[in-house]
Length: 280
Image 1 (cartoon, rainbow, N blue to C red):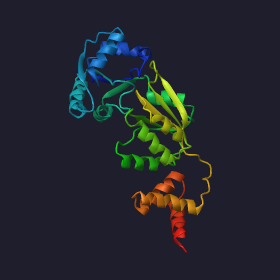
Image 2 (image 1 turned 90 degrees about the vertical axis):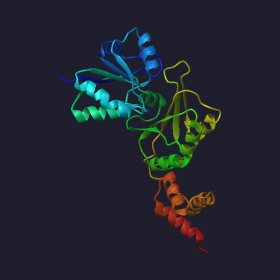
Image 3 (image 1 turned 60 degrees about the vertical axis):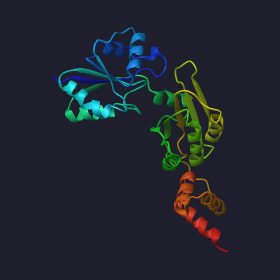
């Protein structure tokens, strides 16, 4: 009989949020693959568990090379427990490669459901939760980040992002530019920890607030685009927005596409406005 791969959720802050099954799985696993072995040992100690299985590291830098080793252990009948530093494996954390490899081999996989920063932030945000999408971390480079956000400008579902405290101010400013400063959002930091904070407001306000610095683990929730009929925009205003981007060095074609995405209107309408503005 082949082994079993167990994806286990770990606390995102308060250790008391650990699912009861986690302690048992830590004690019974033949192999524990951990994103950070030192954090794993601290967690096990807090839960009063002394793992007897082999503990190996499994993180972004070595998961490609270590995945075959773990698959081989599963083939041999091992009970392999996969844990990350916080939350569920595979969700912006190591795990996807191992799951995909196990599926390819027809191996058994199960999960120990646990805390999730995505769902916790979504529930606390006060924004609609009937439909949502998770976008993970935005690109680090400003141009790539702006391009990704332009693609999401008309997304009707509530969006959830992870972000670094070093980039949160730039990301919020980029969101305000792409989605409009009046779009509702919430910045959730240090969830379930001592200094938990949820800052709600319009993106423009949140971008200004973040300039003073935001510490800790951060999850950002942003309202989706209003499905109502788009607001009417004067052609002269559209042409002025394009001209402003051109003055900053953006090619006209890209500027037209960016303005259309930001306002949720057709590129053709923006193009026509630019042409009309040049007529005598």
